Image 1: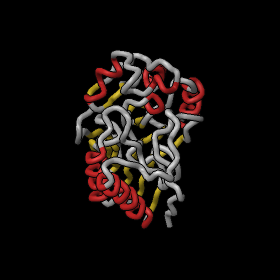
Image 2 (image 1 turned 30 degrees about the vertical axis):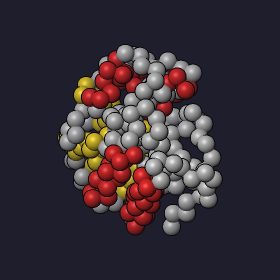
Image 3 (image 1 turned 60 degrees about the horizontal axis):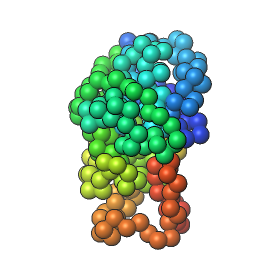
Length: 247
């Protein structure tokens, strides 16, 4: 099993290539702005790996799924996402995909429903979906049990940045439940949508820091601390002030 992470360009989320001995998959695609560049970056990494047989999307936001249709055509790979997102991606929805905030159109994207617990054998290991709503109602994380790695998408944007739940279909209690679900898996590695990969003892430290924030958010009736800056429309996370220190 091989995991290759491609940092996102500008607004794009990071992209992960997961390769087993028999097949490879992509997790997330970024916006459509840099899709040709992203295609070439992916090609440079998979020359000696099995073909990409699926594109797995953590959720339907434009910064995550905007290039999915293009990359699906180029790699002849189907796009899989939680069924709660299917209609939005098929209907050029600009609101719940948040594409309107990027002054962009969300490409019409055909998808295959990917339910909680879905699993694919890659050869030498497998990848499994875990429904983790909160940032959106369609959000999935992905687990590689053999490597004890979880790809969290925007459930955990970065170690020091908690996810926003104030966007369409976001839900604070669901976010809290989803983080608890990942805590219970006790993974050794977390790959967030952005920011550094989280390893070892920092995994539980980060997860519990994010959990505790959403507990406090519920207690404060959804009110973010007044000293925290207001995020720009294209920002998918809150920026704590003072900055969270993750040791």
